[in-house]
Image 1 (tube, rainbow, N blue to C red):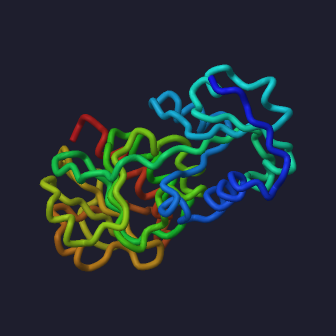
Image 2 (image 1 turned 180 degrees about the horizontal axis):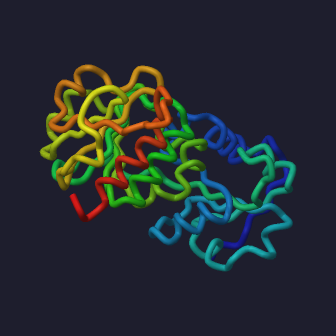
Length: 256
């Protein structure tokens, strides 16, 4: 465990770099690092074998911090609460955050149960879908160009640790999906067989589309199985994250 370094100036170069990574949704791409904060996400990272490049603690939290946090980090820094607030994306700053190195460039796994995100733009929706993917046994998420940045702070918060158990690819072109060798299942509010009546293939790739426009016509045309979620209540459509949870749960059931 490295001894903590105390930083009290907001002009400190390391803090300037951390602010950028913690606040800018795509800064991680240039920095090669991303920011998570709070006990839940920090613990989830450590449980998946992540080693923080930097662990950041408030002066108040440091004496109470789990020993494992400090032992795992390459570098520990302690800062005043006021400076931590400038890093935090939370209304009530958690007191601890990790800076983690981005995983090495992921390679598309052609035979793995997969979730495809087609221009899903809301960070909360993307993070929620990642949580559902992890919960229901999908191990790969492929984000097409136009989808919210997967490692942005908001998506990481919404993902609640799911990132660390998934093979994540982002900025993928539509043509690259030809490498997938599992059937494509596409959901629509207007087309396809009701999901409860389908024998869903295993493994498969589920595609979920833009909040307003849905899945693009090119993906729809490639669908081996078009599926529809029945909505007897008469609503026009479901939120994409809610639809994904229903679909991925249906795929996880053993009676199909």
